[in-house]
Length: 322
Image 1 (tube, rainbow, N blue to C red):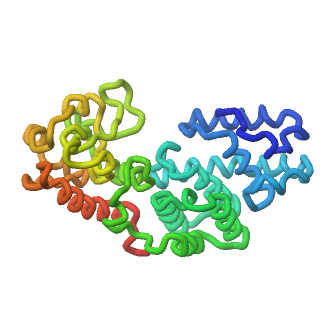
Image 2 (cartoon, one colour):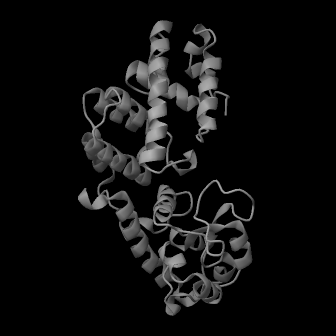
Image 3 (cartoon, rainbow, N blue to C red):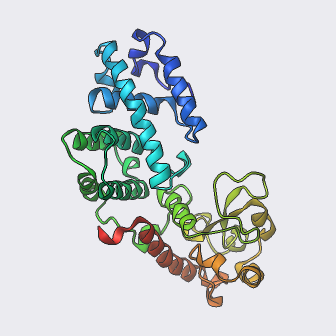
């Protein structure tokens, strides 16, 4: 993670003696705190604090003293961003981010507010961060252009409301409609948000009853995403893409996943319900109507689950007020 993809894009490394060690030391601190981020992200954060935008092209002519002062300011900014995501938004791993650029915007936001943010504004900033993450704010089109738009908004005195307005201009509706889930898979930003929403709702592994988490120890309990209708059950009727639909995915431990293996839901659901009740499935918005649990009901199962998942996502994102 320490390597720079293009050293020519960061010419200030050569003229600031010892800078690389300084950057790598902070990178290691962030990794220890649970956020293993590419060194380039920390340098982009430095550029944002030095220039108010994210492009490396403009930073080569800046005096070393300017860069050093920007570094002193951007480190607390990144620390604020990491703490805000973890403590206020429940995002405790870079694996749950649709783009690490969110950290740059949040850090710059805290800096511009001198880290004095009222309760209502903080709640609105949380809303923006979660919806921007779910909608893939910085993973659509030119991500640097979009980041620069948000930095400019903050540089000009805007706040969370203005960031939300800009996001709405980009994506349209800010709530999640059932049809928005159609055709999405585990690489979707909405899949990451689905995990956050289910975890906040108390989702647990179906056998161990351990709450779902990314950091469980041991192969038995390490979190996996599970195909509710296993691929082997669907392979003669549906394509691999249809089997990987986000509405066919749930979060369970490795041992539970292996025990289920290729059993159809009509076969493995009843023992789990008998042991743990309906809560195990309700927490992950999984319909249990018998007519939906056969291969012939797969399409209807997906449609029904998309409705309940979108409702859960909107409750989690608190999109009703937007």
